[in-house]
Length: 305
Image (cartoon, rainbow, N blue to C red; front, side, top):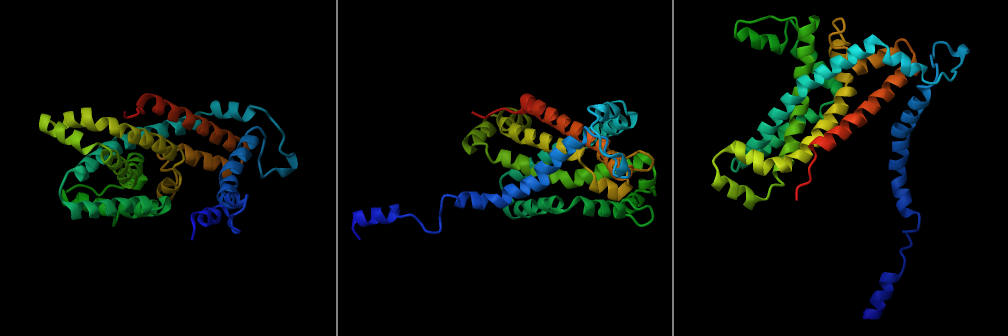
């Protein structure tokens, strides 16, 4: 075939590809995003400005302005749940970051190829487990009579502890389960950051110093900061919306020991059926998440040149 014929064949339009073909391929993803992401957010925003109690439909759903927001901001239970959520976040995140970094550094060391491959596969298992299943596993682990936690303590002559029936025990139990599920995520993110470190620079640094701390601080840390920023942002959002695991394990109890903000919002929205107040709470959490994310990006994120 001549060059002219080849060029003409390349210019000939494909009958199966038209002007709207890209839009048709994108349409399912866009429609799904609109249905499960954008529309619920807009609905919650509109509802937050209304008196919206579905048990009293005869009263209608009148516009009340910022009344729901004022009610939320002056609600002591809301602030108590938010403080408890912050306490939970401060308890789990340092452990996950430190353990995740330690695992990543261990897997980044040369050698042990088969064991490292098996470890990477093992790290995916907790991430693939749904929150509800993690909660069910937690109920079994921390059961007073036949739980694995008390059996392990009995080896050291301790226990049994009634984990899920005491305030400190229940809080510790949800902390442990969250650390178990999300430490591998931190490890994989940090491992990806370590793989970006140029090999010749890292090797030269190892020859210059025998201090692993100095190597981490001056060579590896700049490549870890983007991943650390992502971990902080994603875990902040996850903790603020954490519901399934805690609800299955403790229902927010005993008392209010594990009454995280998501549990409280669910109770307001689907037990009291005050969707206006619950929507205002959810919108405030969305705003808080955005503010926290921007702070992390400003304080932690650094481009590697």
